[in-house]
Image 1 (cartoon, rainbow, N blue to C red):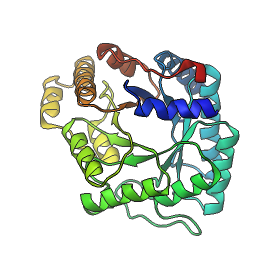
Image 2: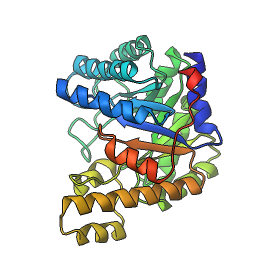
Image 3: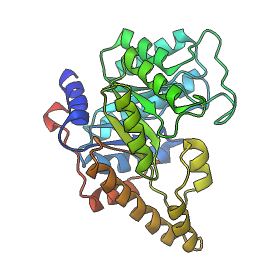
Length: 305
């Protein structure tokens, strides 16, 4: 595990672009079969890590069980390190400690420490859970007390809706780093300029950590309004224009989404992004095509797996 951990961080800070792929726990056995197939396909690209989200639905036991089961599934069908997401929303501090220990027992290679959505969903008022934590930096500190594994956090090119200002948002990221965070992954991006501006703020704050852009290609069935709501990234006018020209044709819509994401990935990497994190929606199709079109292959040390 030590070599794997070193490899995970080394690829994020190394000379070659790092790849990572995000999955969510499937809802049924058929979904698990599909996930195993698509994860195995993407694992052939030698990603730095695969990550598993920590769903907002259900109670503590169900969320933990689903995430750990998916982590174990990925370990069975791939040789890639797995990073566990953990959201503090809806849990006491003691419960969070139990979940951390469960993930450590599952031999994860790192954590993504998140606050999570408010109980009533995105855009609603945040309410602290009784005997729980309030901020993601507190969760980072709690994980760090129990583990030396790499800890990632979320970064927001447009600022977190609850921050109030970009300066405050940067201060929040600084607090996460001070607590032990070692890398960050952005919310979904549809264009490069907000990412550049985020890097400028990170540099001005004196922070030294890899900030990986997060990409979710628009697929034939994607609902753009839903993507904008959940990820806070407005759709660029030019992309909206191109999508409108498809007349709602699913295949044409998919081609536009693929071309746009491929160009964005190439642009981000050309400007020095440390890698790309793909929100896969549990499918390898669009992500694998983008990686092929962009000539992108991971550089994880296979001997560490």
